[in-house]
Length: 247
Image 1 (cartoon, rainbow, N blue to C red):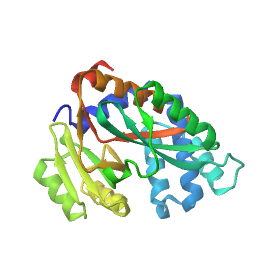
Image 2 (spheres, helix red, strand yellow):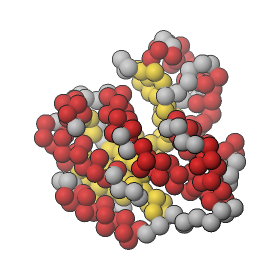
Image 3 (cartoon, rainbow, N blue to C red):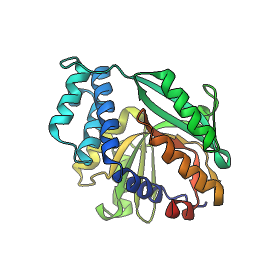
Image 4 (cartoon, rainbow, N blue to C red):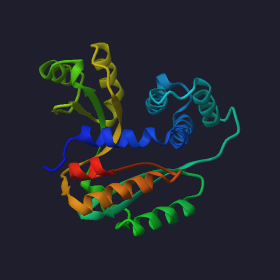
């Protein structure tokens, strides 16, 4: 498979994210606010909020920013009302995209997303046009230096993981969505601290996107994620390494 390594894609998008830290903070604050509104302000009883807080801390977000976002979600402070929206789309090279957004104006957001897709070689799909190509899963990534393959695999399966994949750079553990935090905590307890843990749209099968189409796809995703309302873009593609390195 061309460029199938999840770790290479993580490295690329982390580099892009680090260059846009201010925009990232805005997205993280929105997620914390929405999570607190949906499930309450106690992260111990709200797995989604706990994940959002952990993501914010990993990006060195100040504690006061996190606390303010939680209070806006619980109604202790006045804040903007955000809606969760999910767009399904087709991208270059036969790829399928799941675009997650939090917005206070869905009409504006869908117009922005449609425009970016059109200019970037993609197009917006109808509801359920590509969602059937994905499963919703918890995904935990662990750096290889944390432990040998057999140890990590045994710990993951003992903790209730569904699947385990080893790559040269590290390990990927897949769980049912409801078990993400339980599995992560069990792994943490054994010293296998995750580099990342979140819910993702995991493709049932993948398509290779190479050459110019791969470069176009990388640019399209970066452009979509530049939108303030867009939280994350996921897809069923394996990118050409050259596209990742040259983007």
